[in-house]
Amino acid sequence: MKTSATAELAPVETAALVRAVSRAPSVHNSQPWRLRVRGADVDLVECVDVALPWHDPEGRDRLLSCGAALANLQLAARALCREIATSFPLSGEVTATVHTRPGGAPAAEDLARCRAIGRRRSYRRDFAPGRVRDEVLVELLGAAGEPAVHALAPAKVDVLAQMLGFATRVFRSDAAYQRELDIWTAHTFGRYALGAVDGVPEAAFGDGPLPAAGLVRRTTPVPDDLRLAEQLAAETLVLFCTADDTRRAHLAVGAALERVWLEATVHGLAGSVLTQPLHLTGFREHLAERLGLPGLPQAVFRCGRPVSAAPASPRLPLGDLLFPDGSSRPE
Image 1: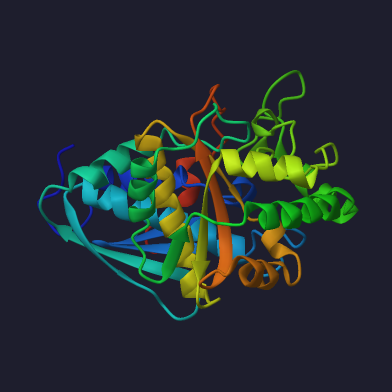
Image 2 (image 1 turned 90 degrees about the horizontal axis):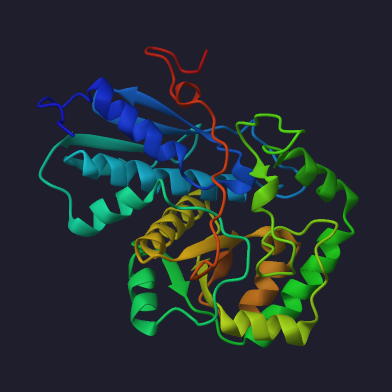
């Protein structure tokens, strides 16, 4: 793509950035972000009115989602032959500002991950037998790119299985949580298709237990701890931890997770994210203690070889993601 010779972003460049951000993963596919372009700078704005009080009472997953959008924004800007610097306001609706200027050709790994943005899917099914090769796992962990984020393969999967099994039973019986999940289920196929622009597609839900199920529904089987431990041991898991539990830390985890996910996509792998159990009171602290983690767990990523295609999630119209010129809010 031909880029602008001036510092200011051209309309075609802005469109490319919006498309990349639109494909970022988000909690319940809620897409809680908007972009504001100011010359060569792009503000990533958190939509705090997108609330999930039962799944995400503190807005932590919403910030992780914004972090994933930020990673896509940065990659897309580099793919446009832009040099970037990113600043992070301490408060307010702007979570980050990406400052761009014309630069050189992108690094090969950045270009490959940027091209993977449109192919990335949430895969809530069992993977093909066999764990990810060690050398590939090293590349995935190395893609995180956030010094404040520890990305690691967890040990003691029997302990993790016990705690995930407990969380499954809690969420299955939580009527308020299940009602909220129903609201965010996008019925995008069949005779009752609603043409949704957000939410999780019905076809994207798995019908098995964790970890493949991803989100716990009323019909999600309650896993036997031993069986779940066997399943976890057969998969490749990455835990994302931070020493701090701040806004900046949550953004960093979201960005790191998306880079790892895109690197997995480059390698022909599929993946999905577990954050639901981490919202139970005391769960993260207890898990960190029992697993000897270097900080609080913020997300669990599972990946492997897919055995079937995963459906694409619906997306908001691109025009809805961009503030009009001179406006602080979309029309």
